[in-house]
Image (cartoon, rainbow, N blue to C red; front, side, top):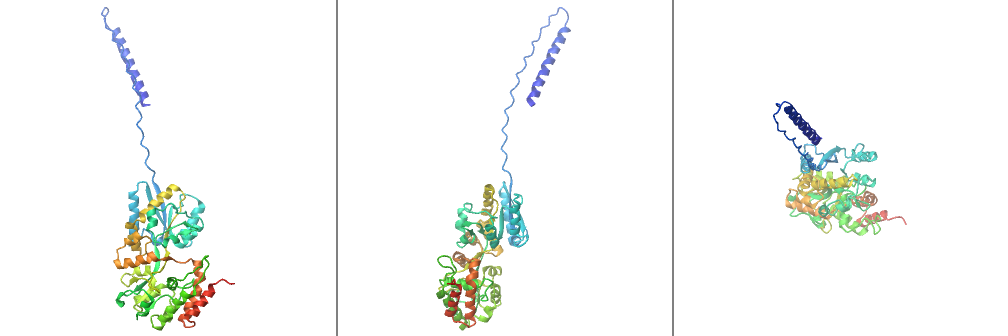
Length: 440
């Protein structure tokens, strides 16, 4: 259009020149020869300018949606919330093509993360389906079984896989596929007052030779025996399943554990009456904090939440080998099925789980990290770090609920029978073994 206007303007100017020439000729005196001016040669129409290539549009801004439980909200004022909020802001500033929108929901129940995830998936509206969700580990297993989340096989970076502690490999799997990444873990440890010991107690011999009282939750739990006794059985070489995966108990290691408890009761290291009244580790922690006992089997989270009260240690076992059970608390699951968004979600995961961010965040929460680099980034005394790293490296996944519900009650019954003086260790162990055996 611009060139057309140029051409039209050129033609109008040439006509005016011709008309002016004719008028001048007509007005000239007779007999006077007036030189005729040559008609102006029209300038050639310039070729249209070469179009300037239009720059390719920049990448479209993609908003990743991350759902989180209220307990981990980045909008609070506690140190963990502030730290996570800053890490997400830093991610948004460092990535021109990605932004993260965090939506906080209840962790459980109606209107909770799993409930909303079911609703969003049923609606199949991309605008309401999150890309990533941080949720309770048990709910994540349900979500995976219902097909609400995507497998992570082939998406996780090799660096992250190598960095994870061994116990995590079994926690996030469903039917052989990796369905989540554990963000925080809980495990039992020994908490003790170091002033009462020349060195940390590591074995049954150390416990029996010390006049310091020991506390553990001998009262059991809903699915049977307490974790402390289960750890002792596994450390003594016991197995919970046979070669085909069927539940079973073994008499020899269970007898050894029950005999240890009987001897500890005889020398006054444990009080059966007090211990059988405890059905969770919080009661053990209170006894330790009040100096009614000198050592107790507690959850690491409780110990870490009140620094300075006690020192973490390895649960004393038959031969001093470090054994404990670990379970995931909060896990990260992938929801989006779009390959491009999956790759972008992995960029966010790698960002948040880098040691310099993930380590300080988990420490501020008071929750154990699931990666070696995360644990190395904690700012704690080296002696405590060494103990926690030993526990995390040697931890075993907590047995499935179905298995615990089968082997737990007979073990608990045997424990109570020994502590109450109703059965000797060998007889109580035999009773438990027979209770788990399938009927002929």
